[in-house]
Image (cartoon, rainbow, N blue to C red):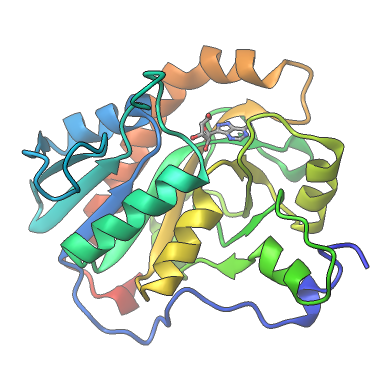
Length: 265
Ligand code: FMC
């Protein structure tokens, strides 16, 4: 049986129940790239910390501050120590999310970033989504039940009011550690019914679920995966404009969260 064939037969775990009635006070915003982080850091007027939160010598960066009564933390895994490029992908996202949750005990995680979008599913460059589900498309383990573990499908924390208030788009997000897409990935992405493709989302959902912290995802489309332009070219071409749009959307999300209980999202 193909890895994804059983997904619909199994109840997908939700990321923490919406019955939780805590007032949102501490936010953890995880971001993979500096270009994605800076517009948000500027808009929310956050400051870089002294680095003492994380193990000595790691590249991870925290920006923090108080914004509209919220303790806001933007965490970026920093640049690769050897190559000097952003530490994108599931491994650094998982590690920095784990360490940040342990250190900051956030009420809510927001994973903000760019993503590829599928035009057959209605995505356009610049669209901003609040994904309803996340799953992996590059963890193929064709053994019963391990196949489902590999796909790692999870529902995100449900935010019907936020979705309505901000008029954002909804769709499913599929995560893998490559910017390009192999034919096998393509099949899994279709099985995941995904509108969006990124390199961190499902990994962050896994860590959030592990430590029982609700997580939501804000993803802005930089490139059309099923379009005619090469992904890397289109991604780089649209990065500046789309990260500006992402910064605006994340600010609106944070504005909405201010003063709310988790159950009011
Ligand atoms: N496929 C996978 N990831 C991305 C993408 C695409 N078409 N467009 N943008 C991204 C995101 C990933 O999550 C990475 O953090 C970064 O942008 C690309 O390396």
